[in-house]
Image (cartoon, rainbow, N blue to C red; front, side, top):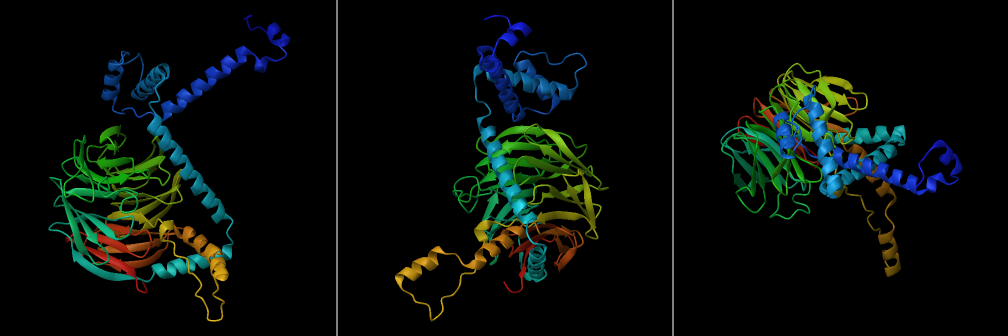
Length: 484
């Protein structure tokens, strides 16, 4: 092939279709594909482990003037080059997860576009109805849950089971609202800091598979089925107490926050550590995933929160504003707002679009121990079907037609149900109170008293009809709207 010069380029009437151009385009596309895989590649963040990995693959462990972050970038580049040369599809699982995250983000954005076009009067009506129901929450009952304080409570996705973690080291499952015990899970040697349900637990997930995760004071993360009292897997790696744990929306990964100043990402299927993330100067207490699964937020006792991009391991946003440690962090269903509760008795609302704090709520008279947004699940949308009247002709043809044609109100009811997701949230504090807040103007809707001096945790069921709190004096309480 002739050398590519200005003269030959001018003589080539079909340069874009030439063999040279095709080769160049292929090289560019291959490089873009390599960079895409490199962005989603799981590599260690601890500098000593980065050096050890570089030594394993025969690369210099450090270069002149190279910083730790540059060394990690070099490791990512070298590993991606090795995978490309071998033709390995090493990031197959991560690519699938990335695609599902992208699909979830597209659905969320599409729903937000629909909400943005909603008539203002319609929004006002929905808010009035939703907040009127929230203001009706009242005490439904209380149950002694354990011998020691209840550290966390979480509803199962089917809203029929409540999991409680205790300082005694046990996780208990309860029927709700009956508050009768189902099973006691024993596997921790120290206090349970957090419990989390698999996104499809009690729905499509088989009982014999992983349905629940918990973190213990001995430093392990345990995975549980619903058929055994013993853990089906124990994931060890943390050097200190594990506090909160959270499932990735895909159900394939678990994040754990620890007093060893790190949070870690675990593969549920292999029970192996995928990522060790540093960045906090003190203990990491809480962790939560964005609904899309692309981002994860962590809160530490250094009073700093951080939002991380799972694909790169880099910080996407720093939540700097609290003056005491952060005990709870939660993503709103809208995907761009975050609530943090801290030891300075406040809740801060953060907006990832403007990269700053939107609002500070003087929420409790003592530590804010937990913050939970209401996440509406379409599984629990119940349209009001029209009742047949006496003068309706009930022949077979008419029955079929009435079956095929949805009632006129169903579309508007579904619109209201989707809009109410993330419209309010709950908080718990060491002042013995549970509070419900609006999530658009951040005003107090309802204050619920408990029979304890300290409320350790709070959660809202996916249908919005139940609220649970776990307290320091060993019991949990259920709340529900008075008319439910």
